[in-house]
Length: 109
Image 1 (tube, rainbow, N blue to C red):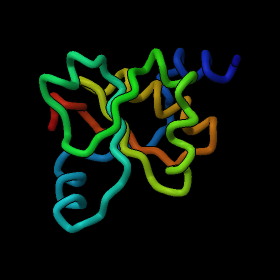
Image 2 (cartoon, rainbow, N blue to C red; image 1 turned 45 degrees about the vertical axis):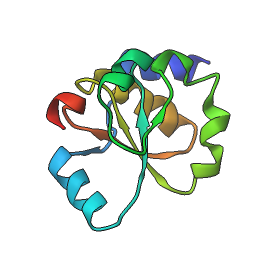
Image 3 (tube, rainbow, N blue to C red; image 1 turned 90 degrees about the vertical axis):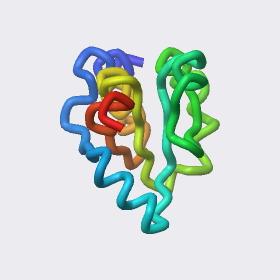
Image 4 (cartoon, rainbow, N blue to C red; image 1 turned 180 degrees about the horizontal axis):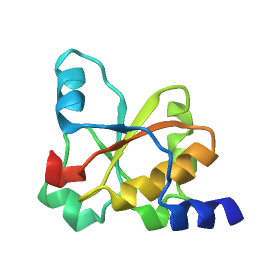
């Protein structure tokens, strides 16, 4: 539990990131990382990256089991601007997931 709060406070510092251009190139080339949107449902409904999974940051700890089947794959996490997704990356990294934060979030997309 302490690690989760530490990740939230530090914003997942040290997590690798990926630019929108790099992610678009990978998706166009057929490379399909798991896309995780940690925004609120109304934000996701307005605009999202097709094929992404929605788990709001505040629900991530309690819904982590939904991601277990993807533990062997890379997860690209995004939010509106990169702050919430950075925190989510910290939480997921602590749990043993391979994650990257989408730089600039949906604003950069």
